[in-house]
Image (tube, rainbow, N blue to C red; front, side, top):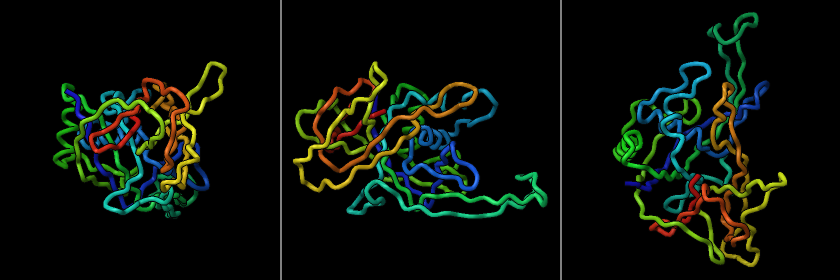
Length: 264
């Protein structure tokens, strides 16, 4: 039996580190992405993380097939983001343990960009016939965790609330509609170019005033380097109209509360 549920995830700070940045500053993704969310779920249910070079962690092997969706959080009239963007700050600190640097004195100076008060709504499609996914369903519903989950760094602990369950159906766009989650906006075609899935309905004026784009990790390449595979994501409060057929793996769903989301 499948269950579609959602939770709201919040933290005081977050660092979703971009792997292609290093000295002099570590930069963060703005949005929570799927590989990071799966790590949070792995901590909640107590699955092992990276243990051995060249092997995918246990949590990822067990949870990588989950279909999820993510949006920056808006609840009870409060918006935690500005046009899809979270506030950011730069944190500087010294690591003087002597174990982090081979420089004279053993002092490593670190500069990091951090998200301030990141908050996300996350939808998860769970198969309760699967032991791991059934455990995740139970832990999310009961607000239990085996390990303390965190937003990218163990200093940035997180919590979740507002567990909800939904009836749902496949949504096939007809005319104008809005997607309430992040969505993958482009797919490759045979000639190597991308075709935009949707175009803006410029004629609409119902509160539509921003478009947010970010290239985000969708999964790990299961090779020894464990690099991210990326997709181009968008989030907007514009109404949209169908412009291209969505691939089956990125299906839209309409929920019992009338939200429309893309599961990926």
